[in-house]
Length: 534
Image (cartoon, rainbow, N blue to C red):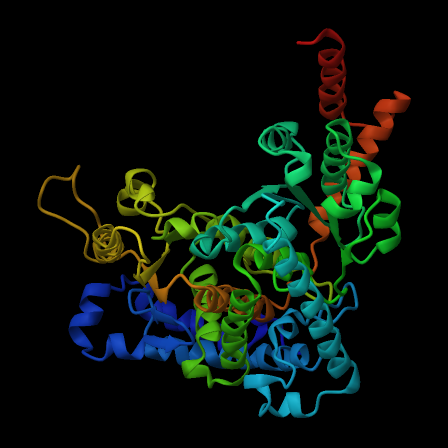
């Protein structure tokens, strides 16, 4: 679909471009002083999101060359193949159509796109199935939402089936149905589930078991423990049908568990892209059918923008190429996410999975080792908390770490003066990273010239949040397409799971032949601890 990125002429040109001015000490303050149009050139309004890229180490000509690199690497070709329903998840031979989950029945804002006009019957049939499942999910969500007997909803999942719903429900707290409490359980550490179960009662709790295969080890261990607790505390086998819902395609396994209410989804929905599917049931229960549709609408608006906007004004493309620029040419190994919003306090954790599980790979789609770095380390915490923790390192540490600020113009209904202070802090931190400080003693000096991106939403409402998450999805796709990797599999995740199962089997048989000394010693110490209680 394109050349290996570092084999293209455009890659060499970008490297020379950086060496000619960036490596020599590009100065952000000077860049603004010499170009009165810098902000206008390096910022834009996209659906629900305004982005200011002007405090990054790049110029207008850099973006033009990055756009040429994207085309040379086949980003647009892979994007259109994804839109056409092709199997762009090459190792699993699957289509990648999470964007279809938020597409209206008539294709909505995408209906004029030439690829959409040429959609084949399978994609059209999939869209019909999406809306049939969506209608069923929203009907169930409204039923639960209006059932006063249900006060607690416990979502049991892991990875995308946990992080996606959790981050959205937290972010949209102002829309959550009164009288409903939401709990998200993923860790197999019994303390997490145990702390939830001690807060709830069987007769007023609905459990959602989110596992496409209904075999995910961590999820099913927690699900069986929840089931045992339910039966031990007054629930009956027949009650399970009313108090457990399975979000899965394995209806047979769910029925064996005792669950008859199921909602399914498709193999072209990857876990970390699944919150728009039946996995989003806890979101729909929390915020209601109408607001869930608004969440989908915001994401669809960003989809339409990504699939049709020209390169110079295509925000997911610009951000994805900025990530390539920062990682491969500027040499930045990590990126800090700083959402100045309490509602987005789990966003960094969500983005860690989205980006590092998607693009944390070193082999191309063709099975060739890459000679360049891929996904950076993504990390962060909400502002202003981070200002009193790791921002010290961002300002004065030896490593240059790009920061991504996310803020809201409208802070909602609580303590408006607080919100003004919050956003001013975000703006000031971005400014401080750029301008630095000198002349007050070497201990106090901050070098400045540290890059940042500023994303500004009008408000933290369902449509804006949907657009923001879709923006990150497409941005990750762009960078992965440049690197030539498959952003939609996760074989590294599977390795640890298989070895854990093997260790459990060896523990039962006491067969440690061929196991390395460290692993064997740790397993034996674990066994001794279980016996001796220490």
